[in-house]
Every structure is written in C-alpha cells, then in structure tokens.
Image (cartoon, rainbow, N blue to C red; front, side, top):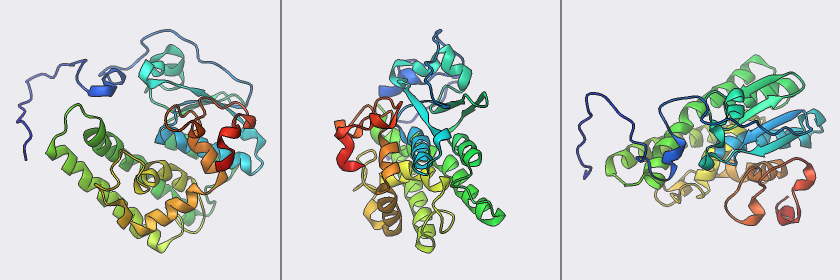
Length: 284
C-alpha cells in the first residue's frame, strides 16, 4: 500500500478545488445557486435528466411503457447539464431539493418525484406494468430494486470515482471498491443463474434499474475497467445484460439525454418519438 497517510483535521473545511473533474458539482450545502425556471413541454410527464445510469433507468421504463401503448407515458426529456450546474437552479431544486438527476413532474397529478428508484416505482404503479401484483413476486422485485439503490453508489461513487475520476489514484480505495464491485457482480451472477430476470421470470423495474449500472459494467463499457474487474467471468450476468440490451425500448431509453459517445448513441433531448432519427435507425 503506497497511499500517503492522512490525518483528519479537528474540523473539516471545504476545499472547493479538491475533487478533480467533477469538483464543481459537489458541495457541502443544499439549495439553489441561481434563479432559473425549468422548461415545460406539452406531454403529461416532464423529465429533467441526463443520460447517466440513473437517468437511463427512467427513460428505459418510459420507452417500455410507450411500447406497450401507454400514451399517458408520453414525455418531454429536458437535458440537465450537471457540468454547468443546471441542477442547482431554483426551478430544479423545486422539483428535487437534493439537486440530483433525474427528477420528474407529472402534470396530470401535480406530483413531483425525485430519486430514480422512486420514479420507477411511481410510474410502475401509475400504469400497472413491470411490477407484479402478487405479494410474493412484488416483494422479490422490490428486494432487488432496493438492493440496486443501495449498491450502485459503491460502484459509481466508490469504484468509478477512485478508479476513473479521482485526480490521483491510490491503491487502498481502488482495491476496497474493486472488491465490493466484484462482490456485487457475484451476487447478481448467482441470482441470474437461478432466474431469467432479477426477481423471477418476469422483466421488471428491478432489471431496468440495474441494467444501466451493472449491465454496462459487465459488457466492459463502464470506466474502461472490464479487464481490471474480469467482467467476462460473470456469465449469467452477461447473458442477462445482452438479452436486455437487445430490447428496442432499452436501446431508445439508453440514449435519451446522452451528450457523449458516438453520435448515433446521443439524443440530447426527447420530445417526440420522431426524435429518434436516422442516426439510430440501425439500433432501433
């Protein structure tokens, strides 16, 4: 272990420059930094998001609902550029006081919903899809949904941060979170050896929540860490991710509010199904 020893001060103080690439997106206080209203589209659901794994969870579900013919799930997806601090506007804070994407406003009920897992649950209950009604089956899906909500921060804020984004790389945090990321993949791999989907035989919001995090990871697309984490050894997890990634609604949902990567995998904002233009025709 080569990390430089650190002795915490008696009282912590905020170093605004500490944090590397994303230093400007984190601060120890809440609330708005500037006044700005959120845009409003014409559809029942207004989504304010970015095409990160947490954002993809919601757009995948919305596209799946629309594929089932649920016209009430039609939505406007407005881009929230966290690099520019859009999440700290007064309008966004009014929808999500935690200043994190995604956030949803349902114009038909006047209800705001924040936290990606809460949005999935709200939409699944509102439209009656992708969440079993049988108590036992529903509880199992909820088990995995809450598992994801508690586990993903170890992958993103833990492993991903120290391995890919931290201004300096240190052995201890990378090893600590690599071990946890691999343990989590093993949890999923063992479950998916017994069941087609997370929670049983039916595709659900548990799968939609988990795919953008661990599906991207096991397919070698997250943090350029596929070889480091030996993701190919998780055969059942890879089978599951490959199957889900082949779904047209998943392919559409994955690119909404995405502003990086190949042009065919970007859709800055989504206001109509026609926004999925010819650039993505070969994927849809």
